[in-house]
Amino acid sequence: MKTFDVIIAGGGLAGLATAAQLVEKSKNLKVLVYEANQIGGGASGVPSGMVNPATGQRARMVWNAEACFRMLEKRLEQLSAVSDTNLRLQKGVLRPAIDENLAENFRLSLKHTRWPKGWIEWLQPDEVKKRIPYLKDCSGALFMSKGKTVRTPEYLQAYVRYLKESGVTFVFGGPYTTDNGSGEWTLRNRKNVYSAPNLVIATGFKAKENKYWTELPLNSVKGQLAVYHSPEHIGRLPAISAYGYIAPVDDHTLAVGSTYEHHYHDENPDTQGAGLLDQKLKELLPELYPHCQRIGQWSGIRATTPDRLPIVGEHYAQKGLYIYAGLGSKGLLYSELVASHLATHITEKKDLPFEISLYRFSRMEELRDKAREENEP
Ligand SMILES: Cc1cc2nc3c(=O)[nH]c(=O)nc-3n(C[C@H](O)[C@H](O)[C@H](O)COP(=O)(O)OP(=O)(O)OC[C@H]3O[C@@H](n4cnc5c(N)ncnc54)[C@H](O)[C@@H]3O)c2cc1C
Image (cartoon, protein in one colour):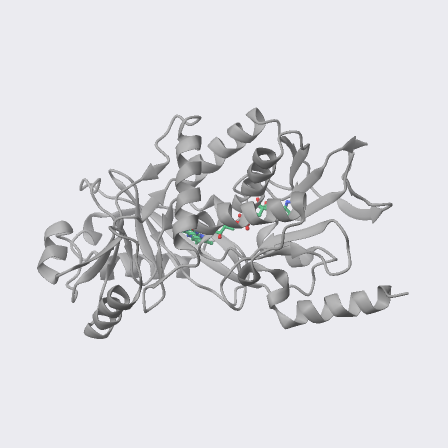
């Protein structure tokens, strides 16, 4: 049996960030990341990830935006040092107002939200045209200089390298069973048994398949994304957020995402998805579209909560069993800050912020109360 202080099931953005925050907070912790498939095998494998501080039709500032950005930027800087590739494309995010109603919403967001200085500006239609000549006509746009695009697969690779250098153990081990007894969690696969007093389930949309977490308020939403080659140099293009997003991958490659499929038959990319993504590109960049060639397609399943914020916490009845899921469409932005809270919750027993706590959902609270009643002498 191999023993650890914490086992993390799942090597996506949530699992890797949790491992990093744990070893950075307590250098002597022995941490194992157990990945059933491969790093980036889940939603985190998205070829190009946009980081956008303004969310929804009203361009609201995302939860804890400043802290999230600070932590992501610190991580990007650190991982860039162990990567051969440029992990981030710091070109901002543009949110075109495709009609006058949206333009009004965006202007109101600028007026009523306390955006940090220098993060966001309103561009008049002629200024938008000047910056992106092949963008469809719009009623102006928000430009978020803080927004960025991250090369997610390379980010994950650099993350694994950094974690290994920091002493984290990785096992790619296929199916397993989990059990607990005498204060230890054991994870048993065909070859080995691993044990630790703490087990974090960070398996994305698969979290509900874990027998202890079947009641989690998580929905699975399939997303497809297509990658296009553009003969035109698009190196200066910011990410564009409208009907999904268009994000540069490199000087001649674009990622167009994504579909939101609440009902789906399988997890794979399909021709219907490809058609929708072609349509998005055609709609947004009509002059560039005829020259672009679709060269790849990708799909993943997001796990989302009813209020679109992540969900973390210790199980209502199982000591030492934690959940970290529900990153939705904001895995890059939220993963570090949430992992940092979870790590201090595990190591120092500090309370989690209510907005991301498991127990903000009444069903979870109910189950916790019931478990407490049953345990009362
Ligand atoms: C099409 C699409 C586009 C997206 N675009 C963006 C974007 O632009 N910006 C952004 O920030 N976010 C984006 N996201 C969302 C982002 O990808 C997710 O929020 C994030 O990846 C979720 O990370 P996770 O670690 O919770 O889950 P996952 O990435 O799904 O990781 C879970 C891991 O657990 C492993 N696993 C599964 N079952 C088990 C098990 N039983 N035991 C051990 N391991 C297991 C899986 O193989 C996987 O590696 C997008 C998602 C999709 C689908």
